[in-house]
Length: 157
Image 1 (spheres, rainbow, N blue to C red):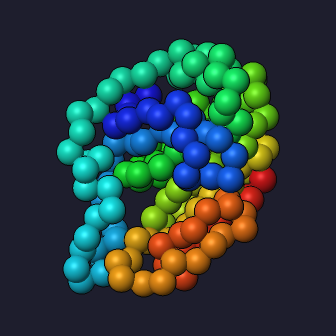
Image 2: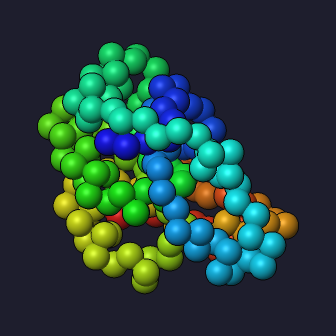
């Protein structure tokens, strides 16, 4: 899998400790809805891509006694849906721990991808674009504050 970053023990992106996997690509859709076009992941976008073997990532996760979930996030995991699905398929052979996918898309924009994800248990998706300068709110599904009222998460399977 092609990634920008791996954080083996992350405590800010989900209510459970997680292994955070930052994906590589973005289509800058947040700029569609926000004239200021400020990217909260601009530093991440400038990082070099790294290639990681799915099986090796899964073994790293399983050997870590702290992480209890996987989070795929920024840039945009949906643009790497085939790689994400391949990882999930292999991961589910070893663990049913939660998998959270942060996307800037809205549900109606990724119906096909959501159907593919629904075949696996314990998948939670955070929907909605980043918009600067808005009030944040606490999201119960993932147990963290999201940056604007249009973002929300829900368990899809």
